[in-house]
Length: 186
Length: 309
Image (cartoon, rainbow over all chains, first blue to last red; front, top):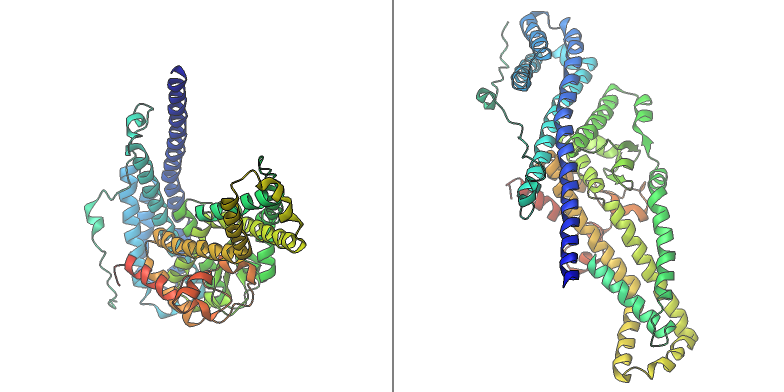
């Protein structure tokens, strides 16, 4: 009889160890995923001055748009805290969007291969920021699910795991689709 | 996989019982020997197979392709490919695989490598010329999903099992011709109930003769299932199943045999590189023998994911 109890205890202990290791692995991936977003955002900060310099000569009449982009970048670099950073990065994205839209008005710019390459790099950077956020949300969801399903939910909080927060838009205005004005205004 | 393993164990059990065992102890020498030989060849391909596949396809690393690029449009497309692969590896949370370009005008792509740390993705010139950035992203996501779901490892294990089955079948064939092996079991059979053992022997002989064919069919079935899984996992990465559906349509439309990819690696590609007509039709023959599911079914499944079918 004692052998059966002993066996059950051993099985439960092994299961608890496996669960703990799995949750540790997921939590570390969640932390890494959050930092990866920062990696991509920094890359964007470094790339923007290049873009502005490349197009500045051809787009003399759009000085306002270019200045807005550089100022938004400066604000984003000096942001304090995650909520502030999220808002400022959003503003930078909007400024870049306006720049892309306005650049459509310049046929010489469109044909310029350097600009196309740089536009591709910036498009890719925006995509990477987006995918980094997507991965963070996916891995945070896996982590939360692993903690909350039965029978793990009985032990997860005992072992010291808390559900992770998903990345979300803090500013409701960002949920609106940005208006793209391609009219020729000179 | 369970069906596979059960079938293999059945063959091995029969082999050892009727050829080697003396009825009381089951010496699994036959099964183990066949498994060892079958595994050695399959697992050596596991470790060096990706280099062999890339070499045989004439794949060029993307750095070399970029430095050899002649036009700006070419350079832009190669940069887009590189960026797309990096974006997808970020979305999957995996290290970025090595990127290769295959100089074949037919649009196709394949992934190889035993796990995420040692993976490579190759794309043909034809694919780069045919699809837009979004569609290329869908194709790359599909290939990266093959790596993520460890399909290469799975197909290697299955290749080992198919090899084992082929060996057991071969050895049995030799034994039947010589006639001595079956006689050796008669001494043992006195200890069994006579009728049951004979029926088992007959079933087993039929199975062993059909083993190579059955093994191949099971391997192809696994390959087709994993193709659907890679489509779905790729759509999960991009969150854009319609782009992959459009890419598959373009690939199917332009599809001539991809000569650069040899027969042994056909199952790694996104579309059947051998251009066999059997894959295009429905019915039970292609259901059994094709390494890829019919393109129309794949496209429909993707459109359903995008709520457009």
